[in-house]
Structure formats: structure tokens, C-alpha cells
Figure 1 (cartoon, rainbow, N blue to C red):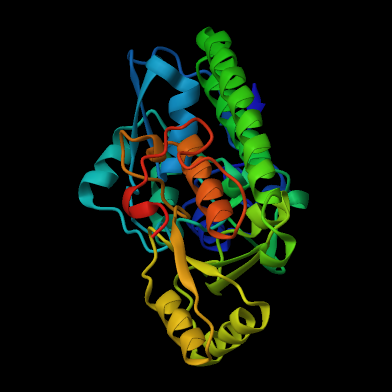
Figure 2: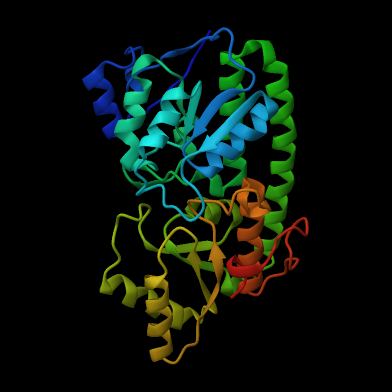
Length: 342
């Protein structure tokens, strides 16, 4: 029998709800709400049902479960998980799921109450990012961890391990299947990590600065050695003021940065304001492309997978900032179009 930490101390709204409803036993003071047991659940239908909040988490579940499960993803293409509110059908899907995976660290901030309620019957509700060692997580401020760990492929491989271990504990009869699926995905992630590192390193050092709509790329910057500046904070609920825009215009002009980037799930008005401000100061800046930050591409496309999402981001960033990357990405599968170089 293994114990899993579903909610950590820094997820304070969820923690408060856990105490309110006595959802989970208090086994460890360091575990926020506690460490509910994840035990074998007996016979599941074939396939059983997994619900995941975001595409990045759902992709892990699909990779590991394979044909053992169907996976429903709540937050789709171009949708901001920071602001997402589940519909009645989403709640019904959560209630009918055999296991729920979500990111945690308050990425799904407006879903906190729903996720806590879903867990009150001890249904497995697992926050994959919160299982990654807190010592390697970035903080926006003390006690508030940056939830965008998927931007570092190495860290997201640890989230993959969480899914493998969770499904193996819940469905031990098929643990070998989950281990095999996880090993295959982990090997692909390692190759992807090498590609991202290589193409970002090809950007001239003077141009190696990534300016985006909100602060979702700090893990990317740390892992792949590129300076990152977001107009808004970690959560898109924060607002950028005129002072923030003027400060970033100064940066663009002083550093002669050639391109800035919009995001598929965030409005582009602030990025457009930067471009106009720099133009008024005599420096031409273009939109380097549209990046996938908090949501992947369209379902059924290469960019609608985690590997495709990171391949796209790294390729677009490198090419826009003067680096070297294949026009169609790591495996020649990028489609181009509206999310490529504008």
C-alpha cells in the first residue's frame, strides 16, 4: 500500500476545504490535507474512465494508460486553466471518473472547490505537479509555487512517473503495462529535451530573451538557459499596468530584441501594446509566433500532444530569435499556420 499527497500546504484554498469537509485523514502535518491511501480498487471496467483538467496532464494519462482507459480533458485548446470554471457536464464527468488527475499548485484556481468536493468520497484525485520535489519548484513569492512545470521536459518526466505509480497502485494487475508505457514516454521525453536544449542554445546570446504575454515560461528559461520576461504574472488573473508596459518597452529598445510572442490561451493586447510602444521609440519589434503556454494545440493534431507542444514552442522561439531549427520542427511534423511564425 502506498500513500499519495493530493494537496500540499501551499494550495491553501484546497487545504481549507479539506479541513471543512474532513475529506482526507490527517496523516502528516507536512502533507497539507494529509496522505490518503491509494489502494487497489478491484475490478474496473475495460476501459475505465480518467478525467484530467489540462491537456498536458491528460497527455500523461493517455500515454501511461494506453488502451486501458479513456481520458477526458476538461480544459481544451486556447482555454486558460487559471480562469476555467467547470460546467455541469464537466462536473458529471468528474463524478463518473474512476480517477482524476490535475496539475495542482493552484493552476486550476477556480476549480479548487470542485476538486475538493469530488475527493470527499475518497475517489483518487491526484495533483501530479504537487508530487514533484518542492526543492526544484520555482516560487513567485514565498509559499506560492509556479505551477508551469511542464515547460521543463525533465521535470515533466517526474510528473509522468507520478501517473505511472498512481495507476500501478490503483490497478496492480496491469502495473507492468503502465511501467512499459511510462518507459516508452520517458525515452521520447529525453530526446525531446535534447532537441529543445540544442535549438535554444543556437540563439545568439544577445538575443536569447523570451518576452511573452504572461509568466508561464520560467521553468523553460531555467532549463534551457534563456532569459524570460512575462508581461502579466504567473496567473493571468493579474493585470499588467502602464508602468509594466513602459518598463518592458525600455527593455525591448535597450536590448534591441527582435521579436516577442503571444500565447494561444492569453489575449494579445498587452503584447500589441509593447510593439506599438517600441515602434514609437524607433525600434521595430515583430510577433515571433504564437506559443502554447497553459493549453496545448487542437485535439487530434501533433501540437495537441505534449511532445508536439514543446517541439512547436522551441522551434518557433529559436527561429524567431535568430537560432537554428528545422522549419517543421524536431520530427518534421509541425503544421505551420496560425501558430507558427507570423
